[in-house]
Image (cartoon, rainbow, N blue to C red; front, side, top):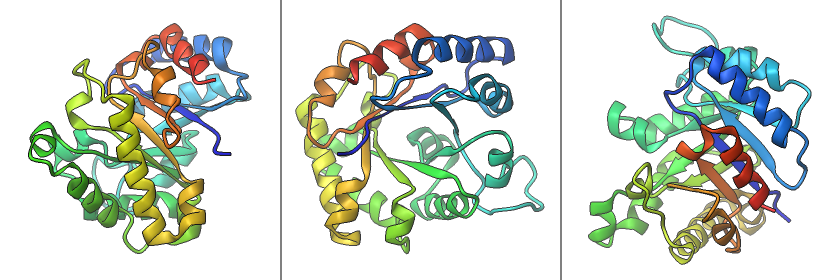
Length: 252
């Protein structure tokens, strides 16, 4: 049985006072849940403060990005996996569509970032998903297959035990549109079959595949009812503690 995951990506929101207050509220509301794993991804500037506020609770902390080389070096403006661990992170989001779209991240770069994260003892939440033109052209499966093959190239079964996949149809991120539960299930099942083909059925059956894209309290239950939807990567609805807590509780 795969433990569900509800992860909240705060993106470029919240200064320190608001971030720590949201963390305090979340600790009170869902800090001791056991039916699912709860993860929050604050901006870099709030990682340590949020991690300190959540210390001792069941809520884990993720970063939203990581440098594609490990350790330390001449990479002005970058943050390494070692630095993220030092700031209290156990997870990191890699390959989000906004990174791909606005900052030109390729599947090869995603692969390097995954390797750097794993070497730095972080677990990776790897995002894949198609744009609206790609879906309208009937290319959604080809696009996701390319992202999976490129992003996970050269990884081992052991690496995959520290990996979470997040399917985020780009056309549903921040738009208010959501893939139907059936659309989500079809793609999640496709992704699991791809992983089985590369790594074997045992590994594929164990990997958690999250859905992301305008997830709200009123649609999480139906999404989670699908056999291959193992949770959600939540964007805007994770910014308000009570709304995010509703999603966590609906995930039962």
